Amino acid sequence: MLILSGGTGTPKLLRGLARVLDPEEITVVVNTAEDIWVSGNLVSPDLDTVIYTLAGLIDEERWWGIRGDSFITHTRLSGLGVRERLAIGDADRAFHILRSDLIRRGGTLSDATEMMREALGIRSRIFPMSDDSVSTIIKTPLGDMHFQEFWVERRGEPEVLGIRFEGIDDARPSSGFLEALRKEDTVVIGPSNPVTSIGPILSLKGVRDLIAEKTTVAVSPLDGDRPFSGPAARFMRAVGIEPSDEGVISILGGVDHFMVSRSSSYPGRCIRTDTRIDSIDESVRLAKEIVKLAGGGK
Ligand code: GDP
Image 1 (cartoon, protein in one colour):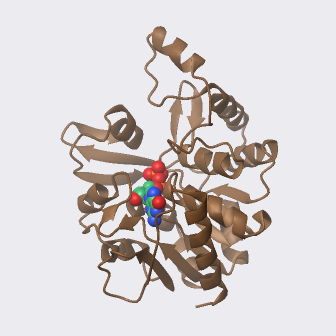
Image 2 (cartoon, protein in one colour; image 1 turned 120 degrees about the horizontal axis):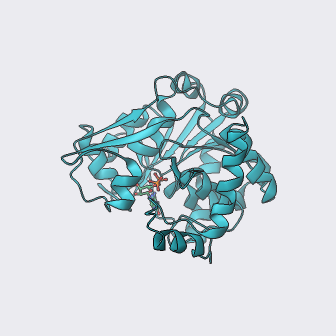
């Protein structure tokens, strides 16, 4: 099963899928359009969250970073006048250092992901959507800014006038992503931000056509017409789409099985179910339902 993921909603679901399926049956392809270099190291927030989730290390309060991590280096750097765009834990940073070192020596983000996966003993496969750089730029009245500046540094406060993905037209899907698209029969589009997490993955050359041949299951990130968390509704409005499940499906394109919350007003064919997956039990329950649908084919 191939799962498309951002860095919060879909990782919550991965906890359940990893219990319902053999971890080796799971391949995750992760958005990299929120990646950013911080203090000389490449931070790939969504990829890190997926890796730490499958390794059982994720901080489940925040859905970023390693549970119980210390922030000595980050605090020292602040004291020295360095304002890091993201707060990075020490253990988390150790992986960023190894990753960036590998990339500076000519390796790819896929190579670095493989190194982390092996180091942490993860049996599922994990691939970045692309090894080429893509950056989410938010247009605001204060000017254009990187997604992380908008969301973390400015706490999502500026008005969002538009969103663009720098580098997306030239970015190729990673070879691991393409291989998974050839091999897997089922693609699950996880409950992630349709604009900034799933949007970039689906915008990569050839991806939509390849996915159209598969059995597809999508889980909406909305609870009724509101996101469970985060800026999805604002981002949807900024790209001219109503925040509703109709809006979500207009971004994702047609899917075979569309799972929405019980309070959804979606008028088309869909499966209304409990899509809140904060607890492991909730995640396992939804994962079982997904696996059943996926087995049913198109
Ligand atoms: P980001 O990369 O950190 O922005 O995270 P994602 O794009 O992966 O996830 C953000 C989306 O997850 C938001 O649109 C939320 O509404 C959605 N989300 C968060 N918790 C839940 C949940 O319990 N169930 C569902 N269905 N969606 C959720």
